[in-house]
Length: 153
Image 1 (cartoon, rainbow, N blue to C red):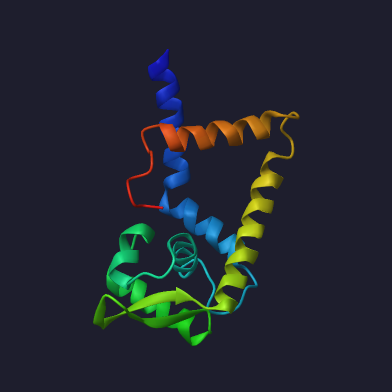
Image 2: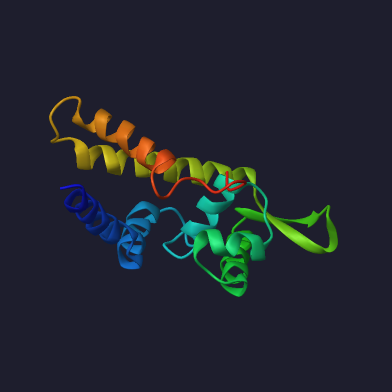
């Protein structure tokens, strides 16, 4: 019985974690947000919002890209005024990627779009089930097999 539940959850997570699922969602969320904001640059914006200023090399594993992929996408965002490069206080030769005020505004709008998209997907659920799902999902993330690694927040 428990393995059946585990398999059902694993199958659902498999769909959610598929690269094509994420890209489709990011494409929907970024529609009309400007030329530099698209399904390719969304992970950079989102990652910087979650972690704060980071080097391209440090951000790369969090967003599923290599350093050069992060750098290319960050350059597009920098040209659009959404990301800036700051000197790394720990290494004079390196720079940190950081959101600009406009970048923070864009990420806030994207987060609102995402919340609305999720709420719309849950609108047909019986009262209370969506809230229970949110609580249980938070618990699963915190206490389950995908718990936060030390220092990842």
